[in-house]
Length: 427
Ligand SMILES: Cc1cc2nc3c(=O)[nH]c(=O)nc-3n(C[C@H](O)[C@H](O)[C@H](O)COP(=O)(O)OP(=O)(O)OC[C@H]3O[C@@H](n4cnc5c(N)ncnc54)[C@H](O)[C@@H]3O)c2cc1C
Image (cartoon, rainbow, N blue to C red; front, top):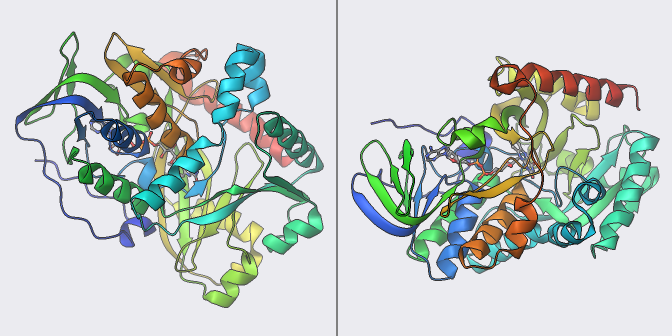
């Protein structure tokens, strides 16, 4: 039987201890079968269990094996597309609902951490850092926009103020969101999985769904067992492969890479990020970084379209880190890894239903830590018959990548090259 371990990341090396979970070897019956134990699957499972559903989660590898256990750990609110772009595409009523939900995922994470006592180094405060005056102008209009939807906690920072929170001279200003913040992402997923089990849910690891028998009484097959369910939630995101061909056709897995330094010590760590906020810059191909609980710098950036694993991650990401923090030139990199997120052409999440009983959410295109927690709630609402918020997502228009599966990678890379050039020359 396959035994897929975690990638060798800092998170896997510092994960909280958890009991091993079995692979599915029987024929089981449940209300909802969730495919994938990342944040989307775990958040869905938790909300459903809290509302009286019986839930079985199938995970191909281990809890948090995908992006949820490898990401930058940044609690970034809203979506990977601005609300005004959404508004122009879908009109004011739907945009109003989506705008109101834009900061809910961060609240859900905090509620989960408090309610289930999850130890995941939660810290408050996230900074969007502007490298150019144009980016600063965009942050100013974004603040006005978010305030229109009731999100009024944001603080604009001028050049002097941003230097108080990050010792990097690249930035002309920024915006601080105290409802943003950061977490140890794998420990959050592990804590949520424990919460699922504490409510009577079952999680099978090393149990990939290999076939879905659709129909009035759907059945999910794994190599050694099957789950009969009233509903299925597909939450495999960038790791789903071709299990559900309709979903693979309109999305593209992409890789992004993260490195982690050796522990910096309190003094150096405090000099870089005195308030321990996390930071992401405003470039299209953005860099993001933060301190870990044991005072390492965790730095991510770069995108590999089509999700091939790059050979030397440190060689790609370390120069970016040194550009931001040249003072770290003698610091050793202890960990480097890659992970996949799922890109959609609109960069908005794809949410919907196939037939009467197969639900899915995927493709938040980068900013997924908060959105996936919201998605779990919205999917659970839909299964309970309250579909207004689900419909607001499900009605977003989506298109296949030009060129189909064969050419979507070069086309997307071309688009990114163009935006990368714009970043470089400050357009
Ligand atoms: C390196 C990296 C850094 C990132 N940094 C940030 C960040 O700082 N902030 C932010 O907001 N977002 C970030 N993201 C994005 C964010 O992590 C993702 O959007 C989010 O975690 C997606 O969660 P998910 O549950 O939908 O998917 P995943 O976490 O990928 O989970 C999918 C799970 O499904 C399982 N699976 C797949 N197919 C099957 C199957 N057939 N049967 C059973 N199980 C299956 C997989 O093994 C996997 O565990 C980052 C992503 C990456 C890769």
